[in-house]
Image (cartoon, rainbow, N blue to C red; front, top):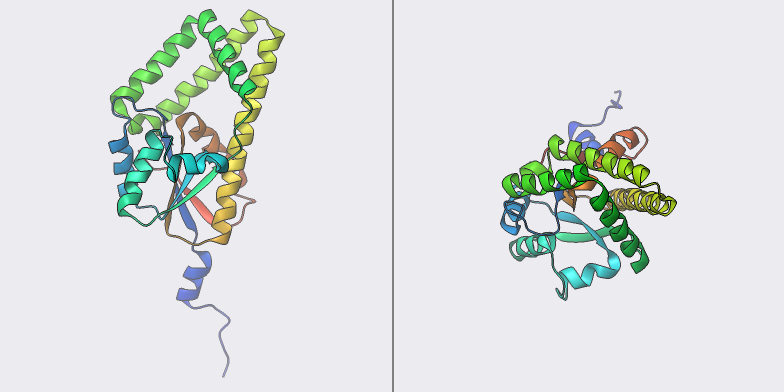
Length: 233
């Protein structure tokens, strides 16, 4: 009697099952319809067993254990945790030194003073967040607007013609890129070591499109331990 080498359907399902992670673009402060209740409602729809957080390990206790600090995401997650078993996983890089934030604020101030278009784009982004909340933050329209914001930032810097601003902008963009790469890598590492049905990654909306783009580039070489879900609205 010959034995078939084909695995049973149950074995095939187990072998190819991947952890699903929903990407949720957020803001850190409540504004109109982008609020704690709306984010908690999104979490209730996803029902994640794991939530990946845009927080460095060193700050995790402040937001989720001692609760001495809070923002939109942490308050919504803590309320979700009150009624659900959920694993919270900080995935961000360590917080940069204070000089980085001082330089970034100086950069934004100079661009704000130079560019009426930049001010208009930022105002439009805030208006859309207030009016449409997470539906906007997780939309193509938000991604396109942030692309326009970055382009205008660079145009304004070139008009100002200050080499120091160029250096600050390049370091700022590099830091963002490194953070996105690190957060994605840490999520992938967790998924390689753990199995779950549904997870959620809460991240600032400006990071959403770059993460989508990077996930598509990496999909052909990464392991089959997870799959991204970009359908949240």
